[in-house]
Image (tube, rainbow, N blue to C red; front, top):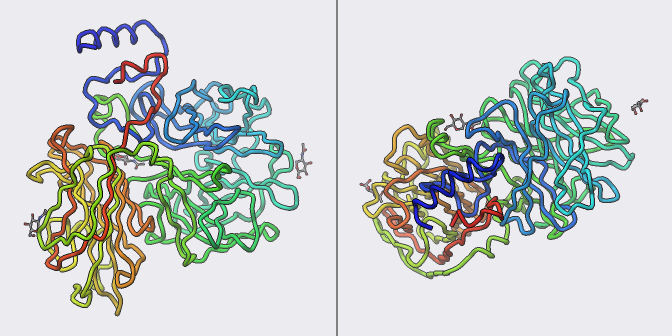
Length: 565
Ligand SMILES: *[C@@H]1O[C@H](CO)[C@@H](O)[C@H](O)[C@H]1NC(C)=O
Ligand SMILES: *[C@@H]1O[C@H](CO)[C@@H](O)[C@H](O)[C@H]1NC(C)=O
Ligand SMILES: *[C@@H]1O[C@H](CO)[C@@H](O)[C@H](O)[C@H]1NC(C)=O
């Protein structure tokens, strides 16, 4: 189709149909992604109600159907998939139309009740701007896509509890069933600056009673939202259903800490009889996070097909509102990750779901290549804007590593002060994504190794400071330590690179960092991908594999999909 006829076709669509779910701004879209979920158009934030039901995966999401900026009156967008890779858009599941959600249908979860009956619990903002909890069920459970949802006439099923502000009570978790036959659900809030996970119980899913004690609370942490609470096996990578409690599992409590827009998690033990959660560690600003980059409002679900727990999260933009208006959209979802408890039981591990292999093509690989000080190795034969790359490094003579200044143990600070342009002894070494030929633009994902307290410490950074020649972008550099021993373990990095996102997994998924970038020079025919080392000591690439990643069919309306080519 020629450009002129494409323009006419789009004008026709825009004028001719009232609710075209299609992004009319297709002509110049360098930052739309090929395999990260995004809606057909407009604003998206939190993933909601992830589930598997009768052969189909469902992803609902917070959506403003009227524009690319956040709005209070949220809708529930809805897409379905057979493989978690290709997604078909459906009509919204909920619009704010009822007295109990007229000012917004905000986040919530699905639970599958016995007899394979899905039910949604979500927060509505009611006519008096109170956050209340509502229930909805599929209109026709035999519809393979569960297109229509019926809101219970007795909503809300949970009102704002005493002592909680009406706008600080939201985002119910997937419910879990204990041996006493009662469902539990926990909902985030705050009380006197303490973040709290308020607990409710019910026998029938509509009559909910508050348990006097919260499931958990942390003084001074501020408002908690988008809680997630689920068991993980103490031994093995398989996931478990949300209702499982036995000595073979530990429980993860994740809280979206509103004041910092960060998802923190705790690992601990849950006892449904005492109704107590005991965490292994305290929650602080240095606590564990799923991801140390742009990543918030995550939600997990149990996938019974492959017996795994899958995690997705909202990935915010790093450009401006004016850019969002020009693009016609805002917000991505992270690529679905399997999540499990590390063998050491101290942290979680995450890894892209194996279905990504459906999209792989043009594998290139390399073994045992030494990278001297200042060397660049271009990874050729792949499409640098759409790539899945894995690389492992081996280091020797570690006793020559720099000593880490004990007064500066903040990894993000070290990464921003010692960005990729600063030479060290071991590091920086890693990948340069979205690199222009002269490296004016580059997003460096790299490691440094230090000595600290008689052992070796591995730092992982994602440096956005040179990611784009554009001004007015959030180019924060991110960093976190990777809990591996470089004397024993190779240092590995996997990166999913997709037009305006780099999703990085260090140490086999022990440390994850997502960055949003908007290159202007490193574009379709001008982008390069390099492995690099700029430390004075050489490092050995033991293994490198990279694949071009094909474009998935994500929310392309079947009837007009050809216009997207
Ligand atoms: C709701 O549940 C509580 C606690 O189980 C019970 O005391 C109450 O009678 C129930 N109310 C209704 C209307 O079923
Ligand atoms: C989203 O990104 C914008 C632009 O960088 C920033 O101003 C805003 O605070 C971010 N919001 C959240 C919740 O991360
Ligand atoms: C390597 O380090 C030198 C010295 O700090 C710096 O000038 C150069 O730009 C660095 N190279 C890269 C690829 O960042």
